[in-house]
Length: 173
Image (cartoon, rainbow, N blue to C red; front, top):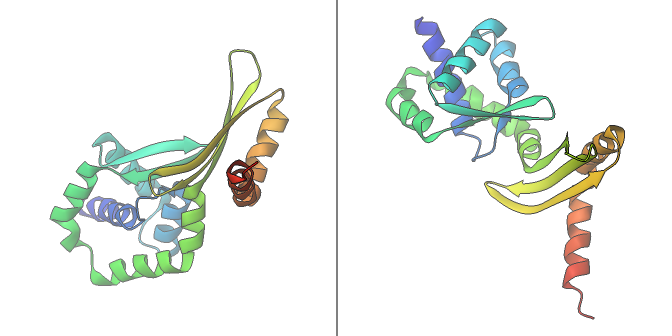
């Protein structure tokens, strides 16, 4: 049971170090399992308990779970952070330094779709910086394939689309 507490603290520490961005289940799992800290089962049990205690929040974006620390989680970490070794803390910081672009991009560029009441699909594409939304576009499209393609393309084309919007809207007639 003491080890589960350590895994929860590692997760909280990771989430606390992401500059208000979310990180994915895969990113948490890759870090912990690659270092042989514990098993996948223990990670999922730890995540589940952290969610139940409202220490972290979870959102699902296109079948991928994204986690973020809550204020209660920050408070809990403040009390128990000293139970995480300096070595593990440094490994987390090194991992974030090596993966910073991937972590940041997954959180800043958002795209998802859902079926609306007209049996069309509403696609929501956004660029977020920290907790601010720089741009959010909602499109209604007739097919699921079209919605999926727009979401897939948003990651690579979002910067160009944003710049085009700014240029076009700022141009004086």
